[in-house]
Image (cartoon, rainbow, N blue to C red; front, side):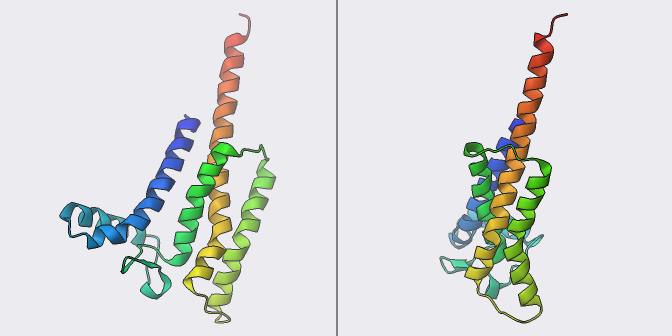
Length: 164
């Protein structure tokens, strides 16, 4: 079950990252079906992201459905989820929490400095500062689900192999 969930999470992350990039082009395509799908992507993204034009990247002359910081989180989260299938260490919960906390520092620093008016970063800096957090979160979620699924399989195998 967990392995299926890990695959689903990875696929969803990749599809969402692709939808973010494809949405501006679909919106401008003139094809009613594609425009409708793009509108759904923008609406869905708008539930979480402020979508300010000045804080968003623009592809093909149209704004992405998420701001630069969210784009960095989503793209790196998808890559982190993929990486978890190829690089998998068995860190314990304490190290996992520490990894996420450390990865959140660049995002927290830029958000704080921006909030207090000390800096006015561009979209590239917002996106880059979010990369460690997104990648670490994607990697941790998928790796944790995979590890839990592996443990369940080993336990089930041990139960089947025990003498009656």
